[in-house]
Length: 112
Length: 112
Image (cartoon, rainbow over all chains, first blue to last red; front, side, top):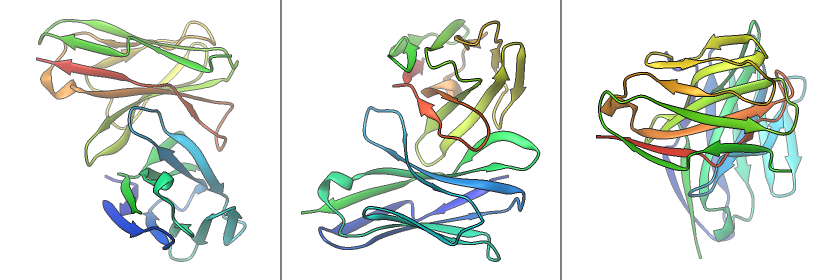
């Protein structure tokens, strides 16, 4: 079963717009929720991460919003730039498992 | 400081052949993992290790073997390659559960 569900599969945003990617999880024991960014031909790299003791974390133009009761978290990219065009993955980890489980990814294209 | 080094970068195998994907790290991180990345499927965990001598299965372990005799190395073995194993494989390391994962550059494997 898919423990972390991510949407949308792809997203096109105009330069300067807001990109929003959503994830939902099932395991209430998860306690670490990172977002990874991947450019073509490269490995994923950590973008930003949140733990469930806070509802929001912001780093520059990137913000994670976390809703523990709904078991959902989202990535917001403000003032999206063409250089943000990449694939974004949400992930989750915690509880009795050491596994870091990823969503299916979102291909973001920011048009100039 | 190379971080995570994967070899080879590209490989073509015939069905039924065996091979080993290499992963080496110089960051002295305890956790090492293997993922495969397929279009629309995201990153799926194959096997992982929380330290030398300790390995466990991920989401899609069938057809793959691993061992971890040292902190630095975590090879992934395909005993009898199948076309379904055509994928991009990533090795990742981290200090522990709930910490940043660092990925290698990937190995693109094609099984014909």
